[in-house]
Length: 113
Length: 113
Image 1: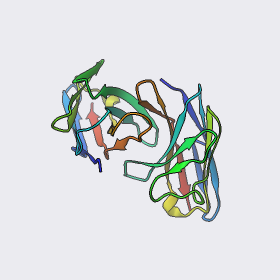
Image 2: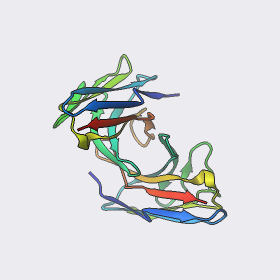
Image 3: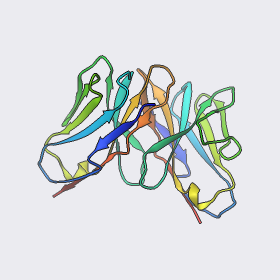
């Protein structure tokens, strides 16, 4: 059974720092991996989607990498801003088609001005 | 991407009552999903809503407690029946688009007294 772990559970950094959020999964046979952002009490916003054949994806200040063989993904946030404060969730899709995402518990990020 | 709306955005309900949550998508989708996020936890899939057939429930969730309707390809409802305080959660509607990318609605925050 696929399990997704995110470390750290919470992180507090000063504004302007570059930071890395970690995600690991137990079964490397995934179809894709998706990073989401969730603001308190709100729904999820899709940030980046990495297919199993890809190594990384970039969007603005965000860069996500995928190492399928080792069961790891990282989300890199450059030049962090207070507006980046949110919970970041990693989710893997075990295989193609209509299989449900398996979520980690998230990393709660606070960027201090 | 996908534009997903949910109604209500939040509600406070009495124990023993039922609440129906609506989910509307901006265009037709094959699969719609309902998730629950209990306080401080990650997302758990409740069921997959199939148009024209019964929903498929995950382990630990039953139709009597969480009846789902899917009358067409852009709309679904989830009912939380005979509520107890343990049902207090955020309920999220989700759809799959493109290369298995998943999108979420803004969520319904339910508090049961």
